[in-house]
Each structure stands twice: as structure tokens, then as C-alpha cells.
Length: 298
Image (cartoon, rainbow, N blue to C red; front, side):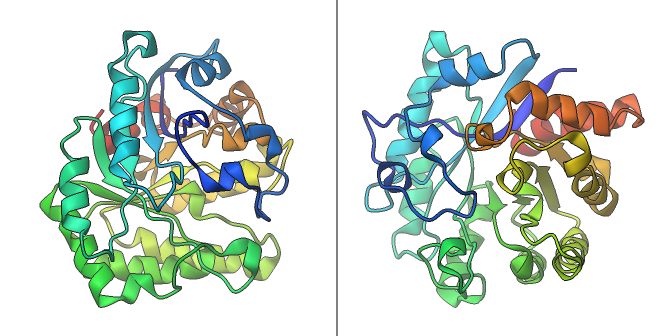
């Protein structure tokens, strides 16, 4: 099975500043000291050795927000252009603060690079310190932020939505209010709470988001909640997501090297393979490769 991985990261700690990798924080995924080191294309391809990985999409890696975010895109373009990289990564989802006064200029400069495909501004918000990020909790309803979000349609790029389950309904409202912007949900909707009420909340939110036909989802990140997982551990979330969105709007992703804390690259993709063994060849082709190619224009 050919793989197009639509969600991974690279970082060079010798050249750039990533505050969360420079100074550890109380992270919901637990101790992540093992990944606080430079991770380049050669490391990514080494992790994927033995699998038919043919395409990939880089997701912004929380490059220092005090710096110009276009520097990350420029660096990734140079990585892609280097023959040693064999074309990896094939596309990039960059960072921009959609509520910033200069957002249109930032988007225009991002889009000067052929590798550019979309924007991710992490929107996870909660009262619990380890679950929140450095932004207000009402961004998706903020008038100025929404004006910046609308600009994505002008530049013909998508938005990678990363929110907690209790924000999924608000994310659905945003998607429905501004349907001209394609939305790609990150990390299976982050089902962090595994009790009955938590799963019910996640399910309701996923169904609401899936009711917007221009929203797709990356099935990934499940290792952040259970290290050393088995295929059986993640199977309910994989199958429920596919049932809710339909196989044609889902794509498998790795979230490496973050999910390297929980699994080898091979184990992750073998788990996806096992879980979908009874799916049709066309469905599997879409989940492993074709849907990512289509949504990210690879």
C-alpha cells in the first residue's frame, strides 16, 4: 500500500527556535523529552524505512510566534528543493495569526512558495493549564479573526482545524458560516477524555462537524493519549470517525515525530492496515494515499 502521510513535522533546533522544544512545558501527552532534538527529512525517512511512503505534508511545528512565520515556509521549500530530500515534504501547512492586522501580507508571502497549501493556527483551549494554548478561547467567533479566516478563500488555501472535543461544535459553526474555506480536522478530533461522557461529547461534535460537506479529517494523534497502543486500542476511534465522515473524507496520518513517543512508524501504519483489512481496495487506497493527495493537492 502506497502511503501519502498528510501530517508530520520537521524541526532544526540548531537553526530555528521552537519554544516548546527549547523549554519543556506541562504537556497533555506527558514527557516528550525524547523528541526535543533536531528531526529532519533523513530522520523521517529512516523512521519510514520498509514502507512505501511516497508523499508527505508538513504541518507547522510551532516555530517561534515572535518571529516571522514565513521563515518556516521558506526553510521547508529549501528542504523540499534539496535533491537529497527526494521531494519531501511535498506540501506545507503554515502558521499565521488570522487575527493579526498584517495577516493578508503574511498569507501573500507564504503563498509565494510552491510548497504552501494551508494554514494551521492551533485553537485548542481549556481552563486546565496543560490543555490550553496561548490565545483567547473565543477566537472562532471573533470578528477580526474571522475576517482573516475568510482571506484563506482569496488565496485558495485550506485551514487545518485543531480543537478539543468541546470545541468541535463551534468549529462546525465556523465551517458552516464560511463554507468557501476547506477545513481539515486534525488528530481525529483529539478524543482526550475516554469515559462515557467524554466519548459522547466527542461523537456529537464529530457528527456536527461532519455535517459540513467541505470538512475532512486526519485520523492521527491517537498515540498522544495512549502510549504503546495496540490496533485494538485505537480501533473504535478509527472506525467511528470513518463511519461519521465516510471513507472518502478521511485520511490516515502519522503525527511523527510526536507520535514516535507512542509507536514506531511501521506499527502505526500496520495498525491502520489491520483495522481496515475488510474495507474495499478503493476505500483503503483513499485512506492511505488518494484522499491526502486530493485534499492537499500533492
